[in-house]
Length: 503
Image 1 (cartoon, rainbow, N blue to C red):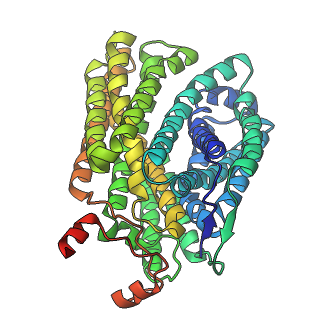
Image 2 (cartoon, one colour):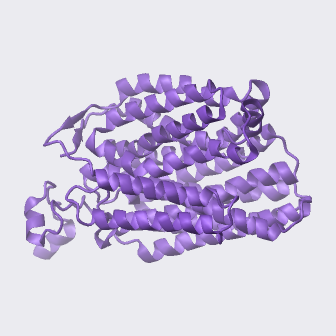
């Protein structure tokens, strides 16, 4: 059985570690972007190979998230966190000392693997160490805020460090942070205690989902080079579909699967809703983040540092939205907050689509849309984390966390690939500021549509949250009586309504 977490976990020491995880993972997805030209000039990258500094991280991260989440359940959450930090920090050091393009790309791939272990375990530790209610809502709110801050600070820090210190500092900046986090983890993260036989890793499922997710991300990130209708893109996506289809077929027959397909069934409608919402919201949010940066620099003429500073209102809005969600989650519920947050985020991106223009200003084109969109997105983090693990048995929280992070990462890759194509088609052959702004506006409009779709999907799919964890089946196809008899989860207490009916 899965490791049991010490119920007296030092939460005051634990939460800063988990927020550091989310901050670092988000930071490293954006911090290298501004440093890419300097990296290319110094190490001798070709124009086509330079993007692999970004793609290598995305491939390893997206491909290994499900495996990383399950390792937290099997090997122990504390152990997975410590090893994830060690791999992440060592890869940052190797990248900062790289002398060839191959060394830097390899370091970024290993760093993505470390992030794939860190991201799911952070959400899992929040779920198992903070009781449902205000404490967990507050932790989830801060978890979401730290991710948004990491992305924005990454852009700003990338510009500052590259301008003043050099591109190597962009990779090395993680090393002291990870060293401090490792020390804090040894004191603040509770030791896992195994209460049953050691579970087995689903090797075939791990290989299939890792290969399938990596090939899918590969096909998506290369659409800037190979058109959607090209044989290369269609072939790559076809291979990904075959691998992921085989993964689903294998998991349906496994006794201890990497992903129990029942987590996305009718008994776990909030989990399904959270992952659909995360996929669609990330598709719009990540792409909008990308096009906002391009608009600030290519159209408005901002430098890297000023462009990063322009994201600060977005960070403030996320903090405000998460704070409101923390206070309302108990009364309003996950469904209401997700629908409201999705629609408000859509309104902000729609405002961007109308406001971005060649002669735009910060006050007229950036500030208002940023605040509206960010408050909406901030409203979603707490209910997303809650719904994604709602009714999930303790031994499967890592599995559910890995699934949510996978949907987020794949959604971001898919959205960016699609919206880059949308913007390119709207821009056409023009290279002037008006043409670029027109392409960015089209991308923002699609981002708004994706968040509307996320809100509608949640309104239709999300059901009532189970009052207690639903135990996983112990075999390929147990009958209801066997499943109930074999459960290790205690039956939920009778509700007041049942008591009244019996009376």
